[in-house]
Amino acid sequence: MAKLGKDWGPLHPPVAAAEATDKLAKTDLSRERQLELYSYMKLNRMVEERLGNLYRQGKVVGGLYSSRGQEATSVGSAYALAPQDVMGPLIRNLGAMLVRGVKPREVMMQYMAKSDSPTGGKDGNTHFGDLKRGLVAPISMLGALIPVMAGVALAGRMQGRDLVALTYIGDGGTSTGDFHEGLNLAAVLHVPFVLIAENNGWAYSTPTSRQMRIKNIAIRAAAYGIPGEIVDGNDVLAVYETTKRAVERARSGGGPTLIEAKTFRMKGHAEHDDAGYVPKEQFEEWRTKDPIDRFERHLLGKGLASEEELRAIVAKIDAQLNEEVDFALASPMPPPERALEGVYEPSEPWEVSS
Ligand SMILES: Cc1ncc(C[n+]2csc(CCOP(=O)(O)OP(=O)(O)O)c2C)c(N)n1
Ligand SMILES: [Mg+2]
Image (cartoon, rainbow, N blue to C red; front, side, top):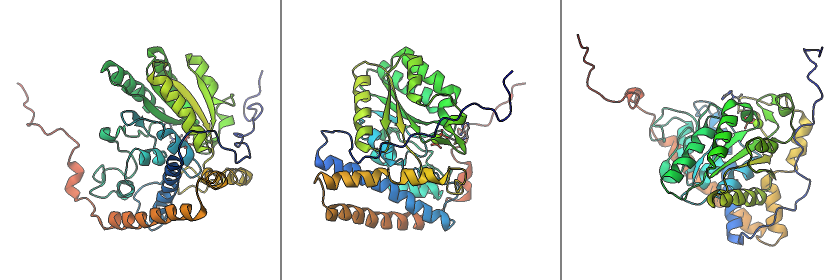
C-alpha cells in the first residue's frame, strides 16, 4: 500500500522560467502601439508601487495584492481585446483594468475606501466593474468568474453582439470545480471565450507541484476539446499575439481557448506576506526575466525608442501619479450612514397577512 504522510511522489521542478533570451515574439504592432504597451506596463507597476507606499502609511484599509512581475500577462492580453469585448479581471489584473480605461485614482480611492471610490467606500480592493468599459467586477471566490464569463459570452451571442469574453485564473484557481465546470460549459456551448491561466508556480504558499500532477495547465484544454496554448507570460508581445489569435478564433465562431501564461510574481501573496516559503533562487532567476526590463531592452535594441524617450514616458507617468495620489488622499471618507445605503432594495414595510 502506498505510504501516506509525506510521501507525495516526486516533485516536478517549479515552473520553468521563460527562456533566458531577450528575443521577444514577432509582432506587426507599430512602434506607437508598442510604446503604448510599455506605458501600460510601467503604469501598472508604478501604481502598485504607490499603493505599496500608501499601505505602509496605513492609508490602505485592507490587503494589497501585487502583480509585480506579471504585468506583461495582464497588459498584453487586455490589449488584444476590441472595445466591444467584455473582460472579467481578477484583483491582480490591475494592468488589464488600466488598459480598459480604469483611472489610477479610482484604484487608489478604492484601496483607501474613499467616499467617491467606485464602491463608495464599501470595499477596499478592486472588486468593482463597469459594464460601459466592458468590465465585470472581480470575484474573490477563485474560479467563480469562469462560468460567469462563459455566460457573458453566451449572452453576447444570443443578443447577436460581436463580443468575446475573457477572464483570468491563477494556477491554484485551476483546481476549483468552477474552473472545470465553467470551461466545459463554454466548450460545449462553443461560445466566444478566452481563459488566461496565469501559472506563477505558487498558490499562496502551495507550489504548483503540490496541487497537480501535470506540469502544463494548458493540457487541461484537451479534456474539454478546445485548443490549449502555452505562452511566455513575461513577453508582452507573445501574450498579445497569442491572445489576439484566440480572440480572433473566438470571434469567428471557433469557440473557446485556454492560454497558460508561464510567469512569476516577484512578491508574496499580499503586501503583508514576505514570501519566506519561496526559495530565494526563484526570485533571483526570475529577476533576470523581468517583463518590463525585457521589453525595454527590446525597444532599445530594435531602435524603436531611445533611452530619453523611455525616460520621458516614465516621468510623465510619475507626474500623473503625483496628482492621482494627491487627489485620492484629499478625497473624503464616506459618512457612516453610507454603510446602510445600497444594501437592501428600498421597499415599503412588509405587510404581514393574517
Ligand atoms: C474558491 C476559493 N478557495 C480559496 C480561496 C482563498 N485563496 C485566495 S487567493 C488563494 C491562492 C490563489 O493562488 P492562484 O490561483 O495560483 O493565484 P495567484 O495568487 O498565484 O495569482 C487562495 C487559496 C479563494 N479565494 N477562493
Ligand atoms: Mg499562482
